[in-house]
Length: 111
Length: 123
Image 1 (cartoon, each protein chain N blue to C red):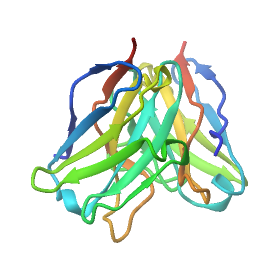
Image 2: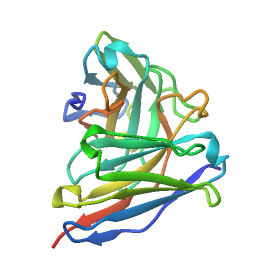
Image 3: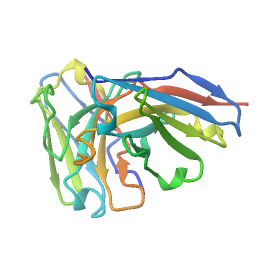
């Protein structure tokens, strides 16, 4: 099971919107609604930001939104803030013998 | 509040084994699945496996089959991950992560994570 493909880095200025893509296959992203996104500040525990493609857990800002089209999922961060600077990982349930796969990770930089 | 507290950093020699613990609190331990995920230096997250905290059944990522054993102690609400035949490529931070949704209706995402345990494999 190969990792899902994400851009290595995305950057934006405070207040701008950015979108991170996550590309998989019909065996993972394209086949299930179970796409989730995690924010990871180095040295800290990852934090669930989006689950089931587009749902936000309680307490997560509505500046974070998710979507999916075919085999590609996306995370959009609007109104970019300094604290949004972190690594972001997508994840999907899969039909393979290894049932969960993560993305390659995207470093978000706030300029 | 839900907390997952992991054991401290370990330094191991190649060929040795390491056992990492993850003590849960703030919820009914036996009602949720517990996963293990690792992150090697400069790399992304990698799913290792999952244990049913109630019954103890496990499912491992294919690449770790035969080298990893996940167990749990319900009396102390603690999950364990033991990795054997360590090699330098196993140097990583290891995380436990709770799957959201109770065992009867797992949600296939990870809502709470431990703080991570650094395992260094070096001769």
